[in-house]
Image (cartoon, rainbow, N blue to C red; front, side, top):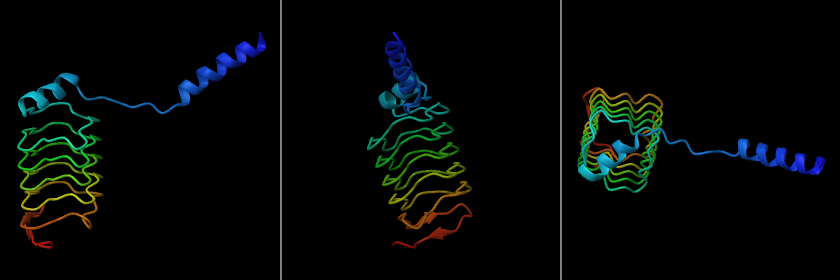
Length: 149
């Protein structure tokens, strides 16, 4: 009997301690974005969009904090006033994306393509731009970066 109780406790503790995925995105908003390519002011936090084709999508003012957008195609996307805090945008194509007033605090951008993107007044606190492609990119202060042209 003691062994059975010990086994139950062990199984229970294992399940409690296993890492679990957190999905806070509103599922209706995710469906709306995928079907219409538009979702302004939506809750897409923690959403999983790895290698997704979101070219030209309109997500103005949406919450994409901690979203996984690794290798996503966001070319021509409208992401102004979007919360991208802690989002993974590594290897993402953000060529010609509109990111004015976006919050990219602590976002991962390694290998991202930001050529001709507009980052005017965007918050880049904690963002490393060393491995980001910049060419004719409007920086938060309004200057144009041609570092990688």
